[in-house]
Image (tube, rainbow, N blue to C red; front, side):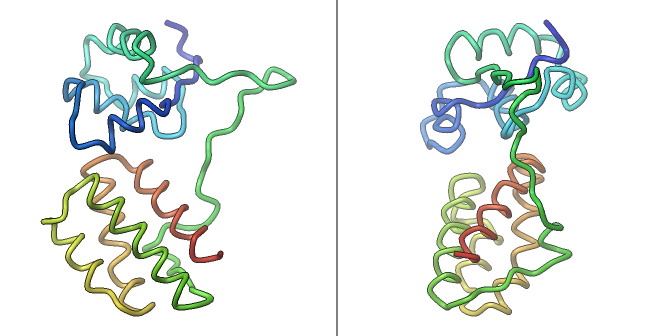
Length: 169
């Protein structure tokens, strides 16, 4: 397989990650988590160096529609994967323009946590208890660390970027 081929999850792959009824084996789900918004096959190999069947599993995921190759855009460059444009939550707390935006972001964070780590996790409990911006900013770094540990650092960055977007309005 071409090491520079860029892969990303499809809608079906996203559903597999966030759905409670899983259809894939744990190792295949780990591949989906590792892909995030898109990485090259070579980067995936570096993330999963001990996976002897990686190429076969990637081919299976491609054929079954859980992942796709990213299309090249004009000039031979691939469409860039979304990357957080600001520092990590632990380094830069988010600012809310209104209490309504804070609640929208908090609800999103709770939904994201529920899907990846469950409602019984301490991170979910602490986020559900955060009622103001200070409490939200205090618990967000812990939630990001939990998502990074359970899913992937990329998933954590995705959550953080979406929270920042929702807080900005």
